[in-house]
Structures are given as structure tokens and as C-alpha cells.
Image 1 (cartoon, helix red, strand yellow):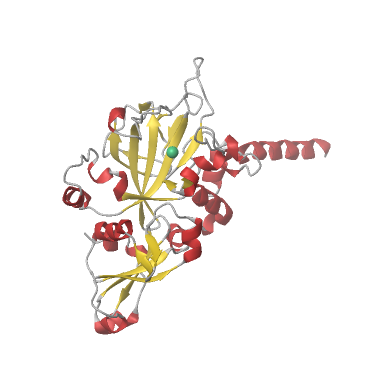
Image 2 (tube, rainbow, N blue to C red):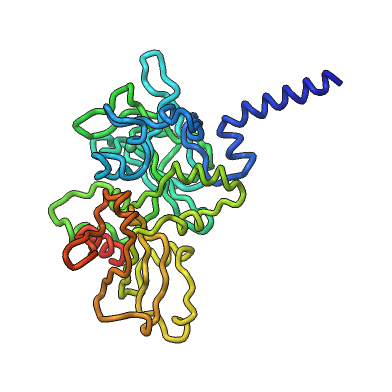
Length: 345
Ligand SMILES: [Zn+2]
């Protein structure tokens, strides 16, 4: 009997060990997103500094997603995940894993061309949502990968590094994976960019950071862990706080088709037809919900109208400066208008 319980205890111990491994989170719950490195401290509430790498002289929060840079006025669109494996010279050697099943869509093997350094983008479709994971500052991309290669969640796709073309280099001490989860804004990005910034270079085509809008990976992993099998990416995106809602008098743009899962039903448009879309944006400018509006539900003739604003959300997350308040009330800023222009281009 004693032995039986000892055996039970031993297997509990084994389960505990597995608990802190990627395997447990991902295999036991068959959850869509794997942690992208061997570092599993993302769920360690007491020591977040074991997971996030801060910017020099700042605290761990500067390595998280959101308005965490330059005193809250600069966005960081990913998370900076701490290195846990080094060689004798102190270089990072953590393997980088594909966060979910998908297809490689972009590899930048020329670190000098990007502040992401050497990076990979993988396309996934989860709960009907196209989502793009991005892995930056790599020292190496796995030899077998090229654009179009299918990958499985947990496959090794590269090795952590410190590559970047920024003037301030990433020190060995700060070695990290910059990891993003993005939604894709517009297929016509390259044309839009050329029209808007005729004198600027775009080395990365539609994989330019301006065309990829991040969601918070930390919040996603924590929600996924909390909700287990109930986790659903569509709900996760739709449930983000709204910063503002905008009406656009357009009925045909690529985001509508790509993110059909985020488009709500409106019985009135079945009778009257669609005049345009009411688009909810989160503080990062990500369209989180779209509602078709019938002509009788719209006012005026303006092609873009700001419908409502959540001032608290703007106060807490000011970095993107999508809206501004002046003597005539809240308005879309030039950045906000430019975002809508790109979205509906
Ligand atoms: Zn980063």
C-alpha cells in the first residue's frame, strides 16, 4: 500500500515537472499556441523578470507588449523573451519553436535590413482567424525552412540571437526573442505605401511592420491557460477593450474577407443593403469587430466618421495617438486617419 502511494506521489512529481514544461500546456490541453522558446516562466507571477527582458535601465514591464516604452508614449508590439540557454561564450542558443501549425511566409536573412534583424513570419489559421507569428533577432534560421514550408507547432525554426540593424546593438546580456502575434491589414499594402511615402524604401513588401498589427501575446497565453479548451481566438480578439469606433463608407476591403469571423450580423442590412462598416479599434489600432450598417443607420455623408471614444482606454494606452481631443471634442488624428486609409485602401 505504502509503495502504491509512493508510486502515486512519484507520478504526481512527474506531473509537476511536466506542468512547467511546454509539453504540458500544449499537449494536455491541445491548445493552439505553444510557447515559442524553452522559457516557461511566463506563468510565474512572482518573478516576471525571469521571462521578460527590459530595455536598458528599465523594469521588466518594458519587455512586455503595449505602451511600455518612452514613459508609455511608444508601443512595443511584441514581447521580449529572456534567453535560458547559452554556449560557453555566453551566446544565446535557445531553440525557437513555431507557436502553432502554419506555413512560413517570410524569412529575412539579411539582418542589416531590419530592426528585427534576422526574422521569420509564419501564417496560421486558428478558429477561422489568420494570424501571423513573428520571431526576431535570430542568429540562425533552420536550414530546411523557406517561404512556403509548412511547420507544426513546436517545430524548431531557428536559434535565438541578437541581430538587429539598430544603432544601439542588443547586448549578449539582453539576448531575447522578440515575439509577435499579428493580424494582417491589407494585401494592397505595397501600393498604399508607395502612394503615401513615395521617397521611402520598403524592403519587406506586405511584411512591413506597418501592415501587421500586434495583439498581446502575454494576455493570449494567460487567457489560453485560464480558459483551457474554451479558449477561442475570435472571442479573444473581439473581447479586447475598444478604444474607439469609426464608421467608414466603404463596403469592399480585404480585411472584411480575411477577417470575416470578426464581422457581426445585422438583420437590417439584409433588407436595406450595406452603406458601410462600423469598425471597433483597440488601442493599438487593431480592428477587433466590424458591423455592417444599413443606409438608414448612418448620418451625413462623410466617408470616415468617429462614432465614439473610450477616454479611459486612451488615457491608459496613449502611445498610438490614434485619436486626439481639442476644442471641438474628440477627433481621429492624422495617424488614425492614415490607419483607416490603409485598412480600406
Ligand atoms: Zn522587442
